[in-house]
Picture 1 (cartoon, rainbow over the protein chains, first blue to last red):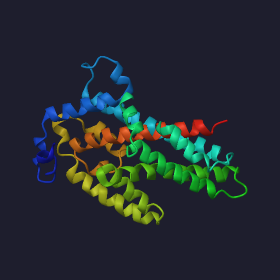
Picture 2: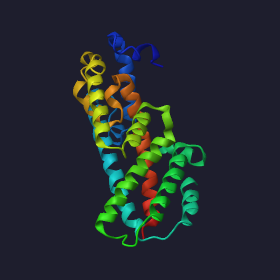
Picture 3: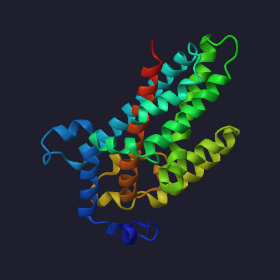
Length: 93
Length: 159
């Protein structure tokens, strides 16, 4: 998609990235964010979207940390290698 | 989050690839537990390994199709080695950062937030703004899959 524009970084040709392209990418990002998606769509500035993205990624990292923590404690108490197949089936259906 | 539902039936979707790998890693970690498995130090060590396993499973499920996954795989591979190697790589990346990453931003004024984003997305330091946004979108999608799967596993195992 952006092959023409985005690969010539070091030669200074990068200023050719159009604003429209950026706007399109930013709005795509906006769709992924849980809060902004629910509010009025045209009033959100791009830098706010980036800000929200950073916050969202940080919160996802933290969730992964918490879940790893929880799993590490749970692993101490279970015995279940045979449950693995059951889990996979239930997760995928 | 409705867009993830069609993937459930698909055995080669990101979600199922991640799930399979992660469960496999989990049972490996589980199999290695020593007799004193509930000491805090042991739990912490296991927490670290689970976290690494989650990231590793995610990165391997995406393989080299994305810049961020390549960067993460690189990071994971050099992780067990001494920290001096990591520092050298970091220095090299910082040098790259000053020459390649800043020329597009001034025009659209995203400098500060884009830099913050660069620190969060693996491999972000060397990307221009366009690629960074692409990679971020995919990275967020993968992170949410990771969280969903881990949550389900944790719920399954909770009493």
